[in-house]
Length: 345
Image 1 (cartoon, one colour):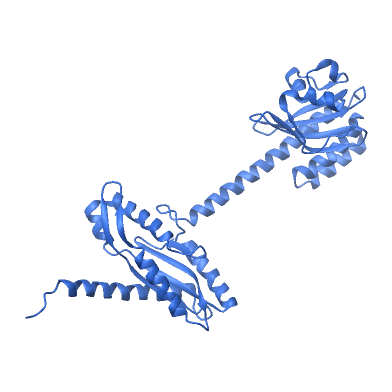
Image 2 (tube, rainbow, N blue to C red):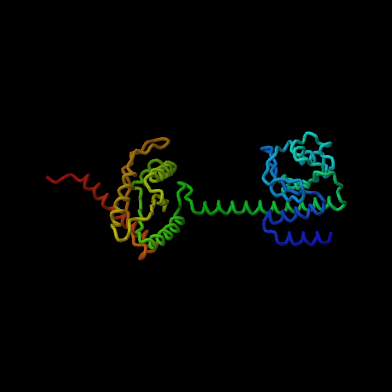
């Protein structure tokens, strides 16, 4: 018994995962019970299935890991329902336990494994094809092992929940709530990564700034809800016009930015910039059907630059694209003014 306690102490202190803890415990459980096989199962009550997660087989009885059996057919279910931890006549007690009958199990011990919340995780079991007595110390050892495994399961579930929550927070922090697009922070991080990639590969980086012309008029005329609906619809419209390798992000109130790798630095990066600008501008001119009205939108101001990633930072690249967009906006305004001024006689 002292040797068992020493082994248990070593296993508990060194285990980092459920498997690290369970496998040596199964060997110790075989020693404590004198049975041929020890195994830990998981139970899916919704699907009515029990799986052997880990097993240790020291005799002729061999229980394969991963083997699924119907929960209704198992000795574990019968034992739990009757509160029976041990029997040396499994066939006589539970003749309808088909899985045990096929394996030839005569003696079995089992204890439920529950997480800290009380939810059933599985069962810790020992079994033999022979009729064997249960040593006096075996039952408390079995219950102790089941409790320790349950605590480890609870820890791992908690860690998994924390990781999921952390991932959700990270996603939320990098996502624009209205459009679902990456936000300004995520864009800057990706642009820095893309500049480094372009510098390594000798490629330019394309940065496109898109500003929704007349958005204030839409907002003021129809209200903020329509304005938000307009921006969401525009985000979807722009998404179909960017390459899979590009990133489209919402930069500000009515501003969007597209970034992507461009042509090689020794080719013609400006050609790539013009192509992106034309594609984006074309996809902002359309009849936008919103819930309560249709807006015949005349397009956005789009400025695209091809930057040398070896010489500019992310902030400088965005400033260059913003400057290019403002030049386009001034040009579009001038065209509108010229169109409404009557020609002199």
